[in-house]
Length: 206
Image (cartoon, rainbow, N blue to C red; front, side):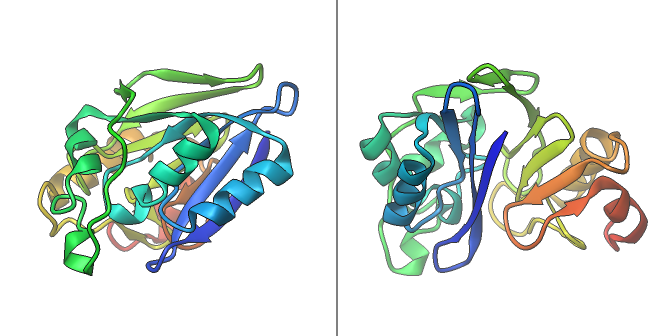
């Protein structure tokens, strides 16, 4: 699997570009900002982007949706519970940062258990992990989980925003991420990568 990791936007969110080595078909997970840089990397990798996948609807994860979609023609995928945030600068928080940023609406909703196929070699399983937002999701392929703002290295996503719930987030992490083996790697929405095993042993919230 082709995997490129970029830190984007003023808050420093992680954007992941993945692709099938056989077909060069790809996807962008959480293009939160710096659209031209994301597009430049896509072009350098010679990928045909099929999907833009948002793990949730906050501005630091959707901010470059429009630029990437216009450059690639990719479909925007998000959980239905967060879909309204794409087009609402109040609920996606861009208005509170002094900017009214919106994304094109979702082309398709994703839900728990869905499989997103990319080329011949990548299958992303959608894992609904509410708590940071109502529609937050993680994406698992092989021994990798793209965790959005559900789980960080040594921490968890904030739960004090509208739609957040500490109890729900902890249940999501324990029931839907900690069920995997220790070696499974976690690529979060902010900060460095970690593993399920490390977080099971050392994360103070768990």
